[in-house]
Length: 469
Image (cartoon, rainbow, N blue to C red; front, side, top):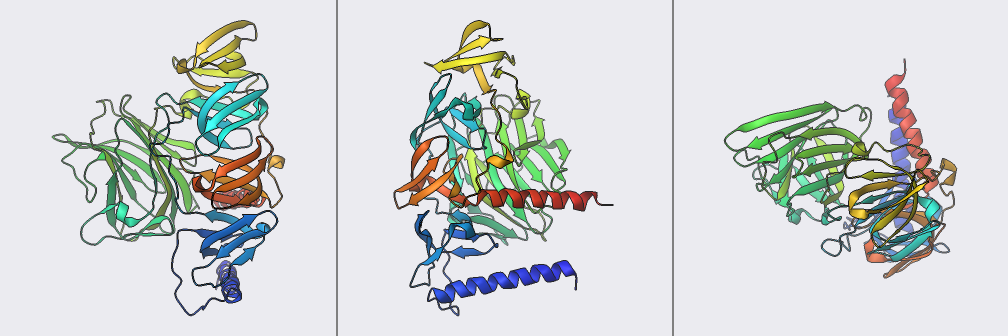
């Protein structure tokens, strides 16, 4: 038997022993069947445990209650990898943040900008109220022309979806839509003029996933109504237009280079009616762009997903559907290390200089650090700041360091203090004392330093496999 196979088998065996030991210590009958819940705890050794979070603090670690356990299990923070929580809250129809704020340490927040001065910046979020930090922590601010409207987060249950008739391989478990074999499903997302569909895709066999946008038929392919279809595989992205009376036309195909040797990635599929522009991102990197020279022809309001290979086996999770203002990072040609602040205007100009302040929806800008001008926020797509990016050494190595991911997108990293049913409390190097609504948290990452190192090791392994002589 191959040595690698033996190694993986032994690792799996030891994980099973660990889980059994935990269940026995908790008073669980290991002969019974565990009931599934939406909360899942992932440990640093790769083990997954269903259950319910009962407590979390820097002093007491994490208290975890398994469905069949009479007692809670206590885990030390340095053994935790990720906590996936129930989708307890959504920002759908609550607010429409006007800005996407990125920080030099990789944090990202959707919110509204209150003010920006030479030294400080303040913003308001739906999940944490007003936050204030040093301006030196800013990397970039994007002004969202039409706001950031969340249409859907999930998946939450199979009942949310309309299933295709006949044999259908789609199923729901543990926050994932999974499929083995073929199948179609979809739902109405109330799409209007734009769409950004993001999801994590994980596969263990070659896949062919088709994503149909702006359709009103969710349980089958329907070539009698207008729609747009993306065909995704590990090697290619293809794009088709379906138009009644005209038929199906392929508008483009792009080869994918960065999925070789991998089994998971995050996809973002975007469409914008006014510009008839379409884009596919993989792990936040632009993979393909397309345009429909005839204009946008589809009128439907939903999305359908289909597996087209009988041997397929893959899953979709962390799905987010929002509106899209048509702006791509590729359009902006962002500087890797700007020597001054850079404005990206809607007329494609890119003046450089110094952002003095932002107040009353106007940007006070010193052009070439000499001439003072004031520009309405509505004329600016993004601002890139002349601040030093955080280095790898800046990633916290202590077990208290966590990263919270919020409903509606965005994340912040900080030191954990405590968690209860109402509040997640932490301490941030940038923002000071923090309090967030517990119901706003979709997942928490632990041991950020370890995860960063594991990601780099995995990337090195793939590179070596692809390039070894």
